[in-house]
Length: 117
Image (cartoon, rainbow, N blue to C red):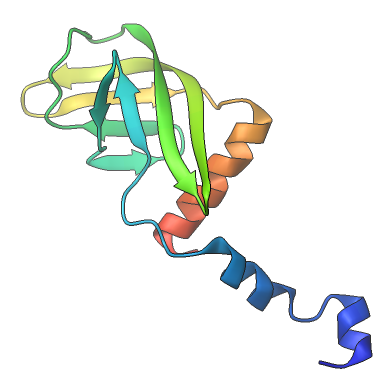
């Protein structure tokens, strides 16, 4: 690597990729009322849990945690959600508000690594 590339930031992409570690295999774990669920579908702002064995009903607001490992750092994000749909066929479909900006950035980084972007 030349001196010019060292000062201009050359090689940062390769170093960042090596620092990220292995690609996550699963979406973030959702914890509702001390029960852990792996979402069947997950996107920024919403998720689907199937099967869901809890007491939430449609249009109910609830608090939950998203837990994931970003590199070597475990991250636990407190969130607030709203049940959009709840039935035996669809499971629990919920939207959630964006977490605090610090945690939102960590969640975006995790989702990018999970989806390989």
